[in-house]
Image 1: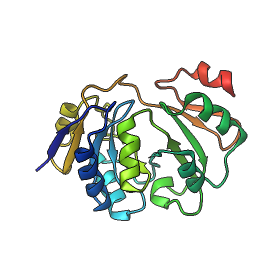
Image 2 (image 1 turned 45 degrees about the vertical axis):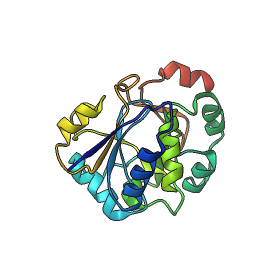
Image 3 (image 1 turned 90 degrees about the vertical axis):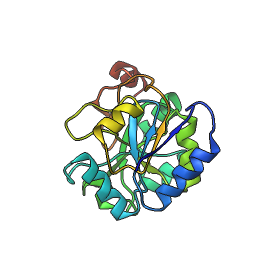
Image 4 (image 1 turned 30 degrees about the vertical axis):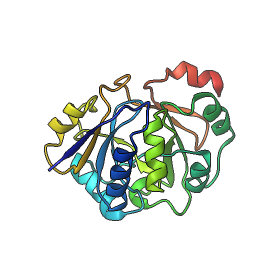
Length: 208
């Protein structure tokens, strides 16, 4: 059975956060509202939890999964190095809907990087998500809450439609702010726009 907590993403519901964090520490996959669309959150360092993310989405395991962080210190633990452009982009767009692809540290599981040696990270604008990361004591998987090939869920109701079973907990934060995914930029070489999303590509390119 799925338990749904109604939350305000701009405020702190500590009971909901603690229950969600406990589920994540227990190896469960839950659905959360972010500052873009709804996401599937799990502990990226628990292999069974990551496998469950792939199973729920019906996603090929040769695709990497982005990670949500709540500080630059967490990024430094996930990345082997921080390219020069990282600091400019993070200062301009974080917290916010920008995902940056960086060289992965050896500690990042292959199930997250898909063996590519890179890791995609984002510091979200949602206070709720950042507090949840802190309560769980780990970065969280941030892949969109949808079955592979289907549109991202923009509400808790859409999450339930796509995942009628398999999610023990959903944090219902109302409609997604934009309905657009994050903009994805590869910084492992010359900065390159991989996906244009909530932040226009020209805004990113004007910084780098």
